[in-house]
Structures are given as C-alpha cells and as structure tokens.
Length: 337
Length: 234
Image (cartoon, rainbow over all chains, first blue to last red; front, side, top):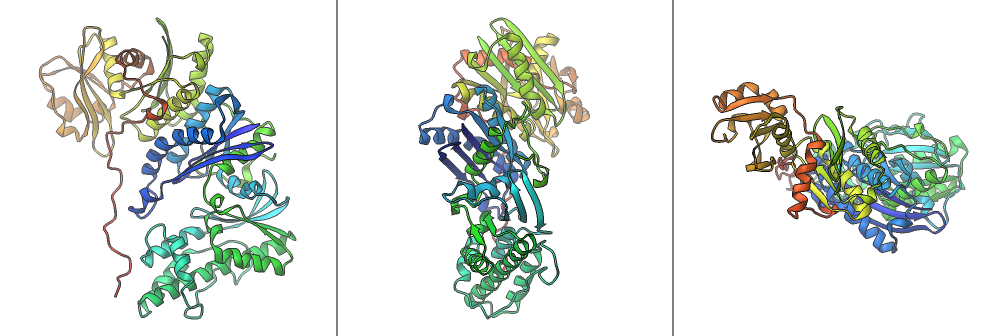
C-alpha cells in the first residue's frame, strides 16, 4: 500500500509518500516562514493563498522524487485538523478531490496524531505504550499513547504553547519572528546564574502547563537590567532554562505516574538541543528511553500525515466524499486502530 | 465535449456536467456546507452520465471573486480532478456566471453583476451579451465601495447579485433611468458556467491544474506592523 499524505494546517505545505513495506519513500516541504515574518506572525489568509499555489507543485515533485505515477497510489491522507480552517481547507479540498478522481480511498488525519506517530518513521521506533510530549508553536501537551488512536491527554497548556512563548519572548528581546531558534542560540552565550525565572505550575500536582507569565517576567527582567547584549543573552538563557526545566519536571511526573518507561518528544520545540539533552539526562536517571523524530519531522511535515494515513487506511478506515476539516478536534475523540 | 463545472464562491454550491449537447446539474443554497456537498454532487452527475473523471475533456471552476475560502474550495476541487488526469482547466469569473444567468433567462443584453464583498465594498463588473448570447465583460472587474462604482453608459441595464441586495439604495439611485430591473437574490450557478467555459476552451484559455488559481480582487488582506522594536537598544 502506497499512501500520499498532504499537510497544510498552518504555515507549511508538506507532501510525502509512505509505503506499507518500504516506509517513507519521498517527502517535500515548503515553508511560508519568510512570507509571514514581516507581519510578525502567521496571517491566516496569506497562508491559505500560499497553500493553494504550492500544494500541487509539491505533489508533482514528490511523485517525481519517488519515480511513482498515479496508478501506484493506493490511498490519500490529509490533515483534517486541528489548525487554521482556511489553510486546512486547501489541502483537504485538493487531496480529497484527487482521491475521488483517482478512485482511491481517502482519510482525514488529526494533525497531532501525525506528530506523536512521527518517531515511528525512524529506524528504531518506540513500542507502545509510551508518553508523548508534544511541544510546538500551537500546542503543548502530554499524552499517554497506548496504541494508534488510543490517546489520553494527561496535561496541556492553559495559555501559550511552549513554542509560542519562545517566539513571543524572542520578539520582546528584538530577535525577530519567528525568534524561538534565535533565542535558543543566544541562550548559549548567557550566564545561567544571572537571573532565575519561575517554573510555572511545578509547585502543585498535575501535568498542565502555563507559559504566558514567563514572557511578562522576561520583559520586567529586561527593564530592570543594564539593557546590554549580555543582559539579553542572560535573559534568553534564564527563560530557556525555565521552559526546559518545567517541561522536564512534567515529563518526569508523567512517566512516574503512569509507570511507563518510554518518552517520545515531537513538535518544533522538540528540536531544541537544550531540551533534548535535559530529557536524555532525566530519562537516564529514571531508567527510561527517550525517542525523537529526526529534526525535520519535529516541525510540520507531510511524512507524519502519510504515515498516520497509511495505518488507518490499512485498518480499513475510509472517509466518505465530504472534504473533512475541523479547526478544533480533541485527540481523545479518534477512532482506535 | 465532456466538461465538469463547480462553483462554491457564494452561499450557493453547484456542479454541472456538459456531455456534448446535454446538461445535467445540481444546485443548492447551503452556507458552510460546501465541503460536504460538492464532491457528492460531482459524483452523482458522473454516475448519472455513466462516465468517470478520466473521460472528462476539461474542468471549470468559479475562480472568484467571492468568499475567499469558498473560491479556494472550488479551486482545490478543480486542481485535484485536473491533476489526477492531466486535464485542462477553465477559470471562470463568478461575476460572468451571474451575468450569463441573466442573459440566458431574462432576455437581457446588459448586466451589472455585483457581489457583496463585505467591508463596505462590492465586487462589480459590467457585461453585454454578444451575437451568440454570451455575457462578455465590458471594462474590468473591480472591488470598490458602492458609492464609487464606475457607471456604464446607456440604458437597459439589469442588476444581478448579492451586492444589489446589500446596497439597493445607493446602487439603484446612482443607476436611475439606466436600470430595467435588479435581482439581489441571484447566486452563481455552475449550470451557466458551462457555455462560458466551452467558449473559453475554444479561445485557448485553458490552463494546467497548477494554474487553476483564484482571483480575489481584494489583495491587501493584512497590514505590516510599523517597524518598531519591542525593546529599545541603548
């Protein structure tokens, strides 16, 4: 079974081909990051307008990369939600119509299911059950994964997502947009002892997150600082340490609470090197294993959607002819495979 | 010629199939249900005709102006079907479709098509029918406040489209003496896109699937923030 996957939930267009036996065969990604940078954030209408220009050329390219033709495709999956409604609709309309015209089955995939199955595309994938930390610009959550479609949300962000907090704080520090990676880079030049930021919601039980207070803390710290380059780096360092520590504390709690020994980390913040090192050290102490997708599959991509689609289509799950999109959609509502 | 046309640019969702001289069509006013309806409509038409998408000669879609999201649904559907079988695509103006409906049904020769564009503006264009009874654009399509529309010359004009409903007073007053009738409830219907698409096909206006793109008319959709750093450097 060869499945074509299409992702268009936010500001990245992703297309991939996954085969049931050979795994990932080809993938292409187009990022709109430069388009939105001058607006200081994703402009939904511009995102949709770009998706409808880029999706077909990417599908064409992905098929060419793999040396595959229409007749080789046995199913199509696309991101049905959650995400920006206008952006989702573009990928969904194209993918669903293409499947209809090719007379192959189609299925709408939950974007976060794609993320939490992304480590499965690597050479030594984790076995079920495991804990998944999903941390991106749009989401922060801890999920107990017992199997495909068996997801229990253990905790999530009550306000800003972790990646959003990175980007907003980077903006405060005048590091541009999206400045999360720039902030992480600047943090390496900061002094760890210069400032100490709170670890939100770690002083009480539970696995929920709250990151919005940290950017206010960063702003106040800056205003009371010498306001030079070193202060900027020190604040970046203190901020990153606070986010990473908080995530690590909650991961540790989740593993202990569920008695599980495997942790997977996905989403754009999962590419943060400091977070990776911290979780590796912590998991070692707990005798647990930590798994990551390759960095390019931490962020949005078509491969994870093609993979999730392949699993569901193989299990006989098929959508009707509706072009399916849901801006809001809980992981816990998914059908079990 | 076997031609499939789809339109989802307004509250109406429609699909039509031309098979040589026969037309079969589906039309439903269903705001926010276009994604549920459009492919089942297409599927029903093809089943009724006993053909598959591979047997089509071309695909047409309402390329706007209209609801941004709605126009993209039709564009996405046209792209998907056309890409699947390497079919040519005809990108047809939704204003032209409105005009064609009036020309075909009201024995009119001059139509002012006007769709409410929200934000106190309208999409506006004038059409006159040619010898073959086809609505043909006079001047150009535009997005303007209703008080600023460019008025056509002469008498005998018919108004069509939601803009006539939203801005009846302003438009009717401005067109005093030039207007025969207006229909503010008229919505584009893919059935009337078929002949326009056939004509465009004959003229060699078909494009490849990748180029089946919407025309929004309103192209400024976001403001860039003033260049001011959140924190001043000292």
